[in-house]
Image (tube, rainbow, N blue to C red; front, side, top):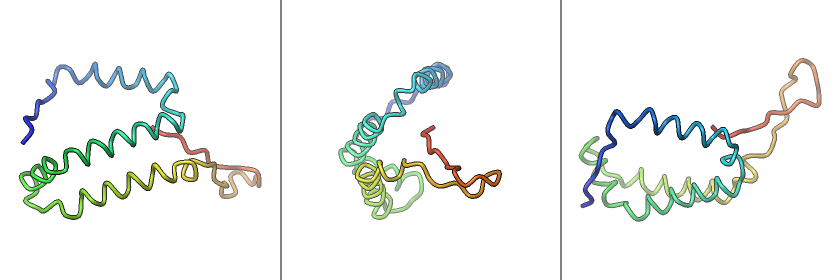
Length: 107
């Protein structure tokens, strides 16, 4: 089992500030960047499935038979369909304009 190292509480504000600063550079907007991040998440879940299952058992007293495969399938789906999921969508009569749309942006 992997030894878990916890983030010291006093480090969290800097981590959040660094994450926000990175977001403001707009590098997180590209589909390529998001696919890389999703790929890294997929790899993390697949490589650590046993440890994640043990954590789910310890924290929730549940089997991870549902959570881990569902996470893997959903992540693969997002990677495969990211272009479709991020396309602008037709707006719903916003201010009575027919040419309105909803632009999806990652947070």
